[in-house]
Length: 116
Length: 112
Image (cartoon, rainbow over all chains, first blue to last red; front, side, top):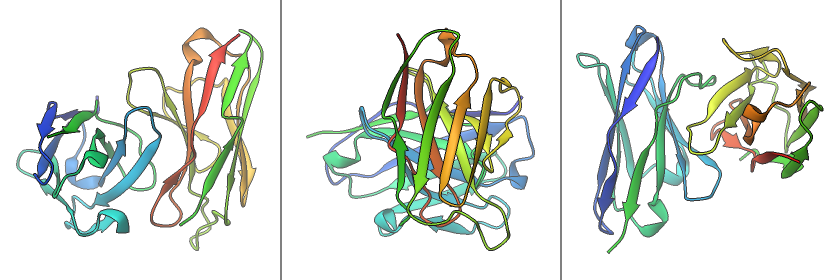
């Protein structure tokens, strides 16, 4: 069955970077893109961008354009999302999801807390 | 950016009764390829979101047929024919027609 398993909780200081991983199994990794969505505590969902596993093309929300990098490793079937220059506003649960327009399977989420 | 507006934001429903959630977009969600990329997600307490419906009315694998979607252009509706206890959670519409993809604020479904 399709599974996306994300890395564990992170605590970071303001100004630092975080790298969240998302390991996929149960399907051919290169045939779907990976999207990233975040959810601040008690808030709604916010789309960050997606990456084509097939050719590495990315599409980032303008809000994160300067601070985010999404990559994939087809040898380990893992997607990565790096977010830099963190502030307290980046405290959220970060989700990976399979697909671009149809986010059909989701990871369990990774809590990133930014605090001094 | 396309703004997605859901109503109601909270919906207390009696078990076994129907429920309906509306989602409106600030512009048409019909893509140049002819598809309308409007999905509905369910997020149960403490869980990640789960896809229910995509392209307005297509039920995702394993989703109960109690869930149905309809609408065109800028107005969309999610209907639950008979609410069960496991349906408690927050429901989001999301558009993937235009980047950045955007979500509705969420509608909290609770049992009366």
